Image 1 (cartoon, rainbow, N blue to C red):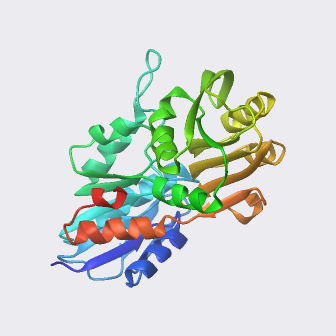
Image 2 (image 1 turned 30 degrees about the horizontal axis):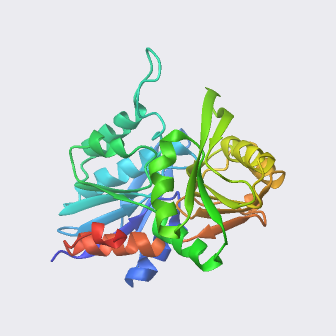
Image 3 (image 1 turned 90 degrees about the horizontal axis):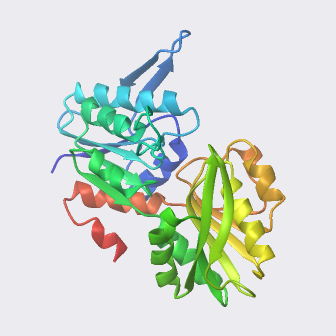
Length: 311
């Protein structure tokens, strides 16, 4: 079996270190420099010839820079004769641009998939893709992981009585239904209309939430507009207390202020994206997906089932 080695991009080294601690191996040595004109240079400092290589890089923060960095890193590894290269992308940027919603617009999620495939990876590991069909944009294997086991375990331990899982839009119903089933709770759906980029309007609530605790479940929390508007409407319709859970805490623009001033008691997110200390507020709880990603890496390396993680 080829030697397992894990390298980290500069976007989220803390997550890579956590994963390596779980696997009891060191993070691979590499060097990333940025020249004064903005060009990125990557050098792999370890011998990777014939190795089974995994690169951890969340394409977040400075999205375009971090995307290009991981592509350059893949090229460096491929030219260093790595036997197999797997890109582990906890957050897949541009996933929301997964279809044409109007004339003369790009499908950027597909373009990013093409960039990864052209760079020379053998497979890709992603977590909670915004749209499941993005897997079909690749002609290489894609392991699509879910944060649901981590979120379900957390809320099971909280043992919240009379809980309702709420999907903030029609697109998230399947995700919310799966979590509601595991939490043995009922399901409600918010009928939402998007009126512009990062702007949505809540129309109706389908399901019984009056006098009950609710858990709003989403995959991405960006400006928190959808989340806080949903919380406001749920509170107005009689929800007792409101929790929220999201996999990817982008938390851009006015997100923190909106959450601070909302009716949400707790926002539970994962560490697929690093949250700067200045954005940490008491309402936010971070769960780690390092063990989940580490176990997936181990099973891919050993050629055993990854899907059995979710049974």
